[in-house]
Length: 190
Image (tube, rainbow, N blue to C red; front, side):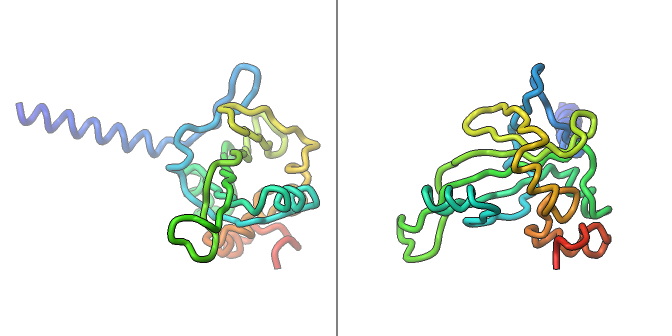
């Protein structure tokens, strides 16, 4: 009996480990909306920006709503691939979780801490669906339509993205890897 229980436990653990090693692929609804990955908070954390603005609209939003935190996550398999090659593989999904910032609360005497969820956004590299990476804004939903090739996200990332249209210049653990692998877009990072 103990052997059977031990064998069942071993099989369960090995199937869980195998599931973790499977590459993540973006999932879509029948009408082409991206489905928010359930477990993105278990993915690899890349960075957090506070109050970052890329243009006039971002500056106006920060002025009206206060600075916000942008937490960026990427699927583990895409992260491991980047560590090897300095580039993002096809089917890479980034999730940006935008959270409100607060300065007054509990025993805090200075600085900022994160509060409620403002929105969730995704950056997807899926060459079978999109010629360039695509961007999605979930708001409070579980699915999101593509923003399209003329979106502000597309224009900004295409022009300013350090590697494959992504802002690796703001990922302190990955920027040295991109430099070493020679994958940085010329002129974007000094």
